Image: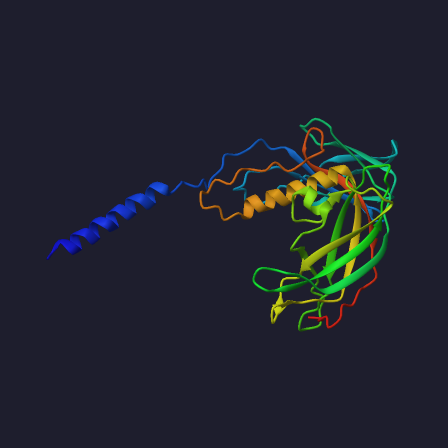
Length: 303
């Protein structure tokens, strides 16, 4: 019988047509967009106020174009404190040290553009009261066991507050050089994080009804041995962030997920990153930081 090869060839042709009809052309070239100034400045209490200025560009840009000919006026609590001009590689470094509880404004003049303005109030620092570490806290469906950090921190029940928790593993490489890593969350079960709807430790005190709160965060540093996640000496940072930084961090996470998505349709919807810059793009926001002492989990590694 010679019908079998004919059937096979017919099936192959059918599959080729079917699969090609499911493909979607993914745009690799994007039209140029209007060149607009972009402000990037995250103000940290007790650190120098620094602003980076650049121009917006399309996704197929080659190199970031920095703005080096701007003039910036810095205001602290509405008082003019400093004027600086001409930032190398777009970096404008002030002599001002950021202080929690104060308001910071800047007015930016760039030739050919409307004056840019932005504002940030730096929150008062909340303190971590206690930290407990659990080596075996969460087991995933594949049987890997993960540790958890349980931290108790201050809260103001009369004011809406926003926070970010960072777990920083203090690791060294084989040559003894610092090779720290930032842990990410797994097996999320804390109601504050669940309420935010994203797997990151960025949250408000909306659900907290007491002057203190204890949060449990299961975490992973990226490696495991014998189905037990690796642990290292670490520190915990509690960032008291302002509303603009809260919005920015959440939308930045969504943006990164969209960019890194391996979407089979090739049509990941765009995510607009939050901006609080008038007459431009970018972010001008800030936080106060409380850093714990180094914590040494039982049987933790150093590299």
